[in-house]
Image (tube, rainbow, N blue to C red; front, top):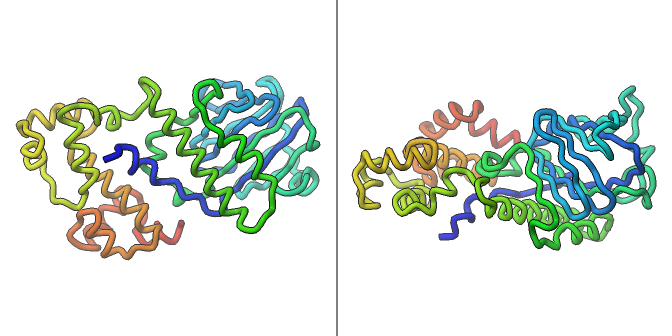
Length: 308
């Protein structure tokens, strides 16, 4: 089993918001769009990403930042530049005193800002609903993830830059898939870094916990118990529970519940019936799944599906 498959199978952009922004310093944009996930790539010049509760980071051409929402943040030419523009929910763009800039700064197909030849150019891709992204993926990300160009060999930033301003037939689907690919490539590079991967991912290399995790991930519908799982990997129940919790950060059955309900959330948004999803993830009835789902996600499966 490729241990990344289930994690990377989450992104499914559908009509994602993509924009090429071209600005001359000084400039500063406050982002309060409440989007669950945004990718920012610098194509020309430079930019500073200024999260409210994390250190500022400078982005150079070819660098990519992934910001996990919905917390607000600022992007600017310099950390000292005061925000001049506010981006709100639905990508509504206006000055701090309320002047609409959406049309005023429109420079053509998916291009916005001062001038097409401005000093700084950014490419932005925004997933607009949580239903487009696997919860497993979001939970694996830090609030801000930055990959500098010299850390990875990825041609997708240049390809996205070449495609974002085109208006050919099917272009929206092309851009959605490019955004997904860029996110997946960035996540793969991030997980390859030392000391950044989630505990369960690192635990896959353990000779005891790794096989147990693979059993849970590949067959979540099986009626697993800690005793059965321990028998399968050749250790005692107590030894597996102790080692699993230490490496993964939660007991085996708690991990299985989270994995099942995360998978259920993705399947519900894909159009599968509640009964089919319950069978697929190991719940004895739609009612049992619905009860567990609402306890964890705060909404019923039907409400979750409709919100996507």
